[in-house]
Image 1 (cartoon, rainbow, N blue to C red):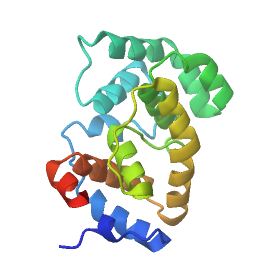
Image 2 (image 1 turned 180 degrees about the vertical axis):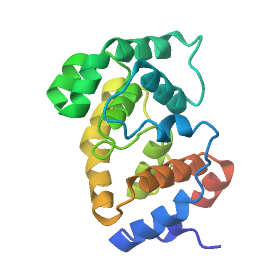
Image 3 (image 1 turned 90 degrees about the vertical axis):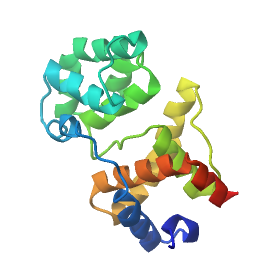
Image 4 (image 1 turned 30 degrees about the vertical axis):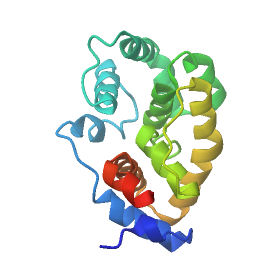
Length: 192
């Protein structure tokens, strides 16, 4: 079996092949409807926000105080979220949501403007780094570094991909699946 990531030569068609291949390996969850039923709404309710963050977390966040605090902050600022959905302004976003953990901020950017801001997490980070320099690297814990990396490195990369691949969700799925694969012992053996 030839896996596209092993022969990637950074031509646009290779990224398309990569996305087509790896998006098929995304593991759909029975809770994916929490995301798909809400992501394209023009206005969110409190429940929409809670369900979207539950989907992102993979489960309810009950008992995890920092995560619940972030979600509570977003819900308490629902007016600002919906204002940003209607007319996005990054300065306004930063003014109202910079006190939320980096990955939650990035996810909030995504749900507010899904075509402008892709999903980003540890798996996507791992996949992106590997595509750039063929090493398996874990996402840093430093919150400002995550945000800086997302805005300065990952967004331009994603914009390159979306100029070639119109199904943006498929890009998210492929990078998540590939990044998760890179975490396995099998992938580490192949790379070594």
